[in-house]
Length: 114
Length: 115
Image (cartoon, rainbow over all chains, first blue to last red):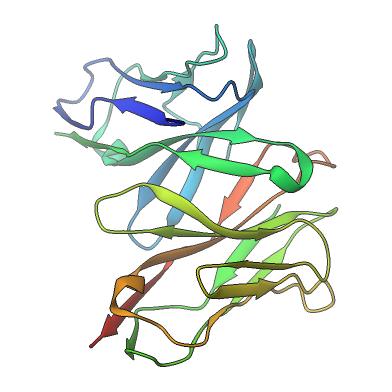
């Protein structure tokens, strides 16, 4: 089954404690992306990756890091989380072939930073 | 930069009513346009898309037409069901300019359909 998986699904942590949210896809997509969803703000793109070892900032990259060492994985790293990073996070991968351009989303990770 | 403006919600309709959710966009180049749906507690799913002007995307009774002259991509359904209750997001992405790879989403419109 084609899917994007994220772990953990729920996480409560404290300010300043480094954390990583993992993302993996099994569709051999070159493109992957991270978003955060906040009430009234829709989805905002944090980082995206067009291919292995190629990452770019989205609209809200401050406070986040990513890496893309292999095609299937795209972890999101919060080196020093702060309460304003409390949010619902989605990873996505994308088939970017013209009319088949389709983005597949993971189930989400709900992060609370105390 | 690119932007997407969606009709504000929430929207509440009775079953079998006609649905329109407005979406307009600002973008350089030739973006692809999308509607995604998010059911409670789940991630987003692609509902329909259009990759060029005058294309009509359709799925599960929903339709939207890419109108370049009005920069719009309004979502419509002729007869909604209770099961259509969800949050709907309009989105765009561009691959042919300096924003290649970026995706921009609207704020989302919550639809509730009552029996």
